[in-house]
Length: 301
Image 1 (cartoon, rainbow, N blue to C red):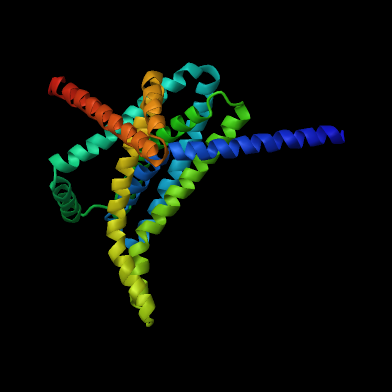
Image 2: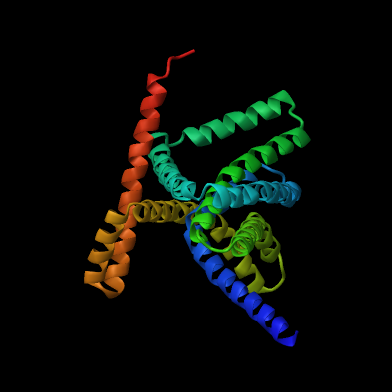
């Protein structure tokens, strides 16, 4: 009996070790979605009253957990009964990441200034129309949860690819761990980001000169942090999405691996990342062209 217990403990330790390693791998692969998730969700509280920012973040976080509670069993069902579907789903997810990145860049450069004007018009309409703040907050939360569902689906599919072929319990543990870590990590950071300016303002009013200096620094950093998150998130989308597409086509993956191996060291690593990014940008541009072409061919109502 003692030997059986030791064997059971050894099995549990082995599974936990596998879960730990695979969770780290999955977390690295979902970095692109994480950066985009952070930027998007931090922007969701724009225009919300300061005392309602954290309740809005909490409301979206609860919706995100519900999204993942739906997506994780669906992913496990696919792994159990339709394992051949994992690679195509990964390829679709990678292409979608690249498409989102290119679309973001295209919108930024082709429609510069339109977003700010649209936001001003929206705020003015709300003020003049006497909109209900509580209803607007609910609508904002619902919209953020819908966006989260898409991003969560990408995270779960990428994680599913990382644990493909592993025992059921390992898949369940890794998917659950990534779902919880990503939710707590993203919305914990979002809560911190949206309150960064408040913290800066509070410190800037303290009697201590050092506290005031830190407060002014935080107030100066807050808007730049949002911009940096957006830029890094976009770059990561190309790197992660391009990497998924590369690994989905063995011939291309082997060619790039041989090239980077020949370069060796840091040069090889950088070259591999650049190759993934270039392929991601090209793939995203192709998907965007197809989507825009389909929109133009669709008959107007």
